[in-house]
Every structure is written in structure tokens, then in C-alpha cells.
Length: 186
Image (cartoon, rainbow, N blue to C red; front, side):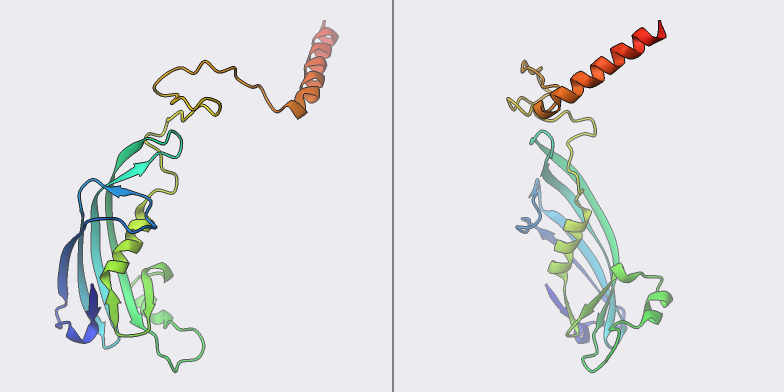
């Protein structure tokens, strides 16, 4: 959804829509369409402020046990969009705009033309809101590395390895050293 700055009324304009399916980069699914809402307010001839929220439930895959689980998503945001002056040399942003609006670099986007793609903005918000480490629960035990059993659902009968075979000699030395320390104390 492309919004041109010159078509915005002085009081701004509100937008609301649903996002039915995720972008290919999102690595998630949607239980139901996500709700996207935002208000685009002109703040100058070449700038707007965008206040919005993305909400809904996404389906993620646990990084430990590979099971699907629902993740409640609520992502409010505030972004300042500025049109870059093509003739300007040096730093592209006027830092006084950031201080004046109490925004940091991450909340400011530079545009080549006086229009903003709200759909693209919502895709970015989705990616920024998803957890870096996707876990169905914090104490998820994951999968057995040998047989693939989900350790939260059943007990694995695999022989547990105690370490890498290359370190077996070192383990024997540590064990011998511990026994020597015990005999020295007696």
C-alpha cells in the first residue's frame, strides 16, 4: 500500500488492513490474518510520522524440538519518514529532527521520493518482532541428537555419550589426578 505525502490531509490519515499470509523471509505462518493499523501524519513537506501497530497470532517452529506453536504478536511502532535531499552532501539526516521528536536512528527511515510503502513497513515490523530464538517454552528439552525423540514427550533409550572420543585420554588423566588427590589427603 503506497501512500503519497501530497495526498495526505493536514490531520493525517488512518489505515487498517489485514495481512493474510507471511512474506517468504518471515519463517512463520499465520493462524488467522494479522491486523495492521497505522496513522500517517504529515510533519513537513518532505516528512511524515507513522504511528501504528501490528497484532495477531503467528505460528512458529521451535528451534529445539521442531514442533509448531502459537506466538502472540503485538508490535506498536513510531517511525519518522524523511525524503532524502538528492543534492545534499555529507550526512543524509538532519539530527535536529531526531532530537526534536525524541526518536533515535532506528526509528527514522530515509526515502528517495515523497511516498512510503506501508505494506513493506509492516513486513519489517513483523521480522523485527519475531523472537530471535524461537522456543515453544523456555524449558523445552528439544530432540535427542541420536534418535530424534522429543525429550519432552518421552524418555529416550539411547546410550548417552560422555564426550568426544579425542578427549578420552584427558578424561582418564583428570580421573587419575582426582584419585591421587584423595589418597594424598588421607
